[in-house]
Length: 270
Image (tube, rainbow, N blue to C red; front, top):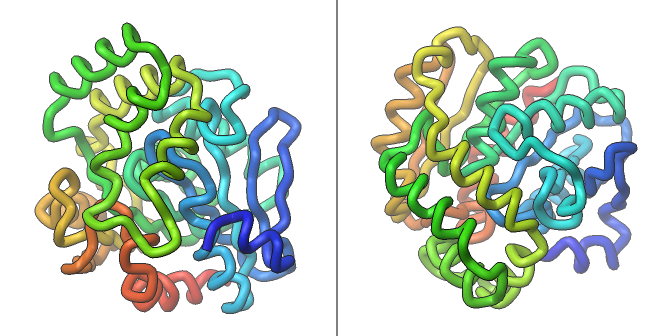
């Protein structure tokens, strides 16, 4: 289900924060769960899970990070730390108190930075298709440099989205991924790609004591189950789940399998 489909059914509201961040919100009084998207993605990638969250009696919020999606006009910095700081401002503006935070891919790196800087605002943490470091920082820096010299057009973003899925989910298309990616500002994409490539949380993650669920796709070539195991070993209260039939975006490729693990974990939020 896309954000538009869900909104048409009256399941999801939407709005902008005072700083211009776009978000989807099921509202309600249940415990809040905040979802953060990956590189050159948007809250649309989590829209289907907001309906599941609502059905479970919780409040679901999915944000478009600064520089991406419908928050493309927001100012930076677009570093992992800067994006986490913007997310903290949204928490304050919406009066969320303690919440569960779910981040996928680059959003999982942002979620790590949020937990390191604002752990007191969280009850639980779910890290999906992500890791504590880049496996190829030199390649990421080279890609960022090439991107800074490229025309920001359909051909450029088509190269960026090719690894999002092992298999494109029903009701979706690579063209839709490309259109969402194209909403991002090139400045944000370049800075975020560079920062993500340089990010390394290994020395600080042992200080995160939150209950954490780490989920990796068995068919994800970049964020492999081995990277998930590294995360679990660094965290003090973490569990790894591998979804064998999923690629890099399990919330869309294997939503039922992901919810079977994520749902019970999030239902513990009070």
